[in-house]
Image (cartoon, rainbow, N blue to C red):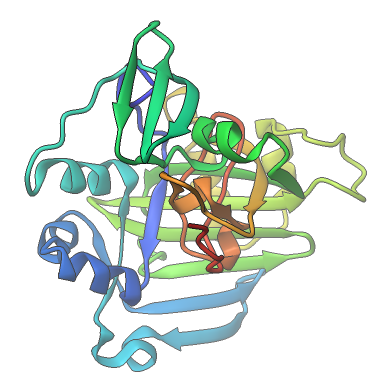
Length: 282
């Protein structure tokens, strides 16, 4: 069941370190993902003026675990949706109620229908309705950062995962294949002279005004067709991911700041990652 009426893909990319690629290999999907994305050989960290701070050789780091890849989230979704046995998905259906009893879960939907299931898995990210119905509504916490994300044409200077770090501002650029680059910028929303939560393009340009190339040129490509997705960064931490026959996965159960983990899910109002392993409750 998917509460959105149509599949939509915000302009986001995803970086898959070798452990994530190893999981895709176990599913027989590594080659299909690699064909659609870009190989990431190094992680380069620079200050905001472009001076190198560190250069991490990912082949040396990961060894025989495998390669690291990056691609557009829509491309990853396509691979997952079109390989293997097809799973029927009902679009535009929201979950309104969960009732557990006798080893089954009765689900009430937004269209007025109900159905019984052996298990319900909540996977809609940080604003998961299944989690709210299971554990309550107080799990989401803002971390005090605002993030801009977008995909645009990749300049020749960006050949691998590259981040430029300024005071309370970072700018990440990752090639995702097809001549495109995924860009991510974050800043703190507390203790700054700007209004809290100001996600305007003017603020983005202002924040990056002192950054070295190719950052100004990348930001200069933004227009109405490539407007960034802007949202506060939020986190979810729960001590348990399950309750009876209801299970939470991914960012529905646990989400951290994207610079701390490997998550990819963003909700209508937030951006998140994924992190530590909690307990499962029987």
